Image (cartoon, rainbow, N blue to C red; front, top):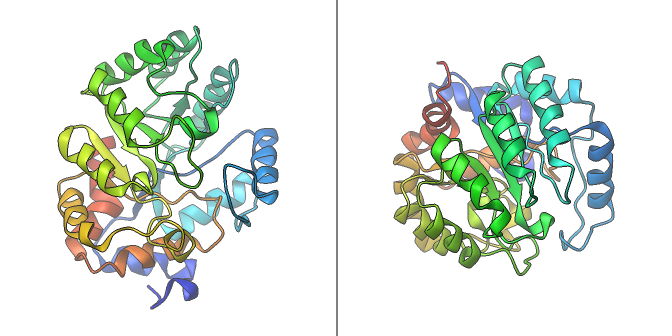
Length: 300
């Protein structure tokens, strides 16, 4: 990989995972959305909307086919298609789209979402029956509390099924009343067996979310955007927590995530930033492939 994140080149990504002796990369935090919704999301990024707090140019403003081809060229062998509902009566349609997308692209993990509404247990059950292997919720964008009573049966369904849910629970990039370790800890107190993956390592409250990963057997974290200059300048990871991050990674609790395609820098910059932590090749192997392979029973 390149020496600096500024010089990171996606063409170097295969050499990165080959040098680690891996069969490729797994990325638990990738977005594919219905075209109309994707255009709206990108327009929000272009306008530096209030939940972003900064300008955020999208680097990979490509078609689905082009983005799929790029992931495969880089050797990303397994990835998600994370969609998230921000209002009622949209999650079921999103799930239909993302599950169809995964059926057409077997290297994509069948992905689904939900929103606090009376219909949620029904369509989450339908998504599980249809083969959903990962869910996504964004409490910041959705504007709801993870402990909303309408979601109690949904969290119970997912805990019983052992299907992980990627949760944007942290305050970054802009906090709300429902983000942060407090609301998420309250959720885990109700559903301690929930398989949750905390997006962005829980930034900026890294230590508190590491505590939750230590405390709860099925709580993990993803590295999405962490340690890149774009993210670090606003919400730097505390150096004192790097030994604990290493331990959690080696214990299967840290997974590589990117936020592709909604990146203002090269995909390779994330991997370069992880390598520069100097936490060892065993840690990189675990984070970039093995932990996700174990969680999702990936071949190879």
